[in-house]
Image 1: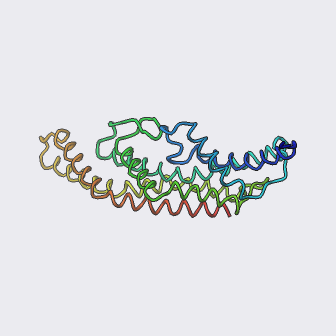
Image 2 (image 1 turned 180 degrees about the vertical axis):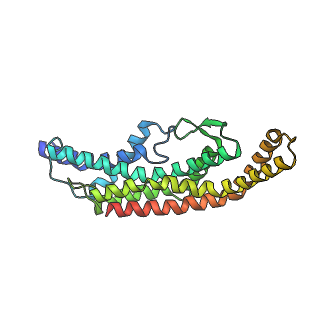
Length: 256
């Protein structure tokens, strides 16, 4: 007959609970995993499966789960998981914001659709970029690399009361500037080209004041915008890949 003491049960609970909290917090807000079409039960199952695989390979902290130290460790694991997800999510949001800026310039700002990842209304062009980068992320096995970094993070940053330092948290906050810089990198070439088109319309209005520019200019701006989107699609993808490399490097730095 198998006899288990309360101390053994508590040690097993601690061994699997804290890794599950960090992984679950990351999957709660990470791209693809936190998509609206992914049920919460699937996220919990994935977090539990990864925790079961990782937990036996990491040192177990000698702490009571419901003590003050246990509560502090739990909060630290939540912060670590959410920070990792925040770093990656900003890359995706930067592309969506860049698409929104470009769509407003070319006259597609009124065309909204439901974003399948978040379930909210976003411009069509931003949704197009979001689908593109999501497929690129999956094609590059970014989801597998994220799980690998989470597993390695328990070795470089083990479970304990010492989580992210104030300097590391400030680094994560500073990473928020990537939202605006990435959006500008995506939208600036197209916005510059459309600005030239609008300047040409301004010259035409001075040369032919009787010309109805609203009836003529909008279709032409839309056509030029679609051409710019088609030509600039590889550049958008390469920009996303470069930003994704920087994001993973930042996550590795945080885990050290």
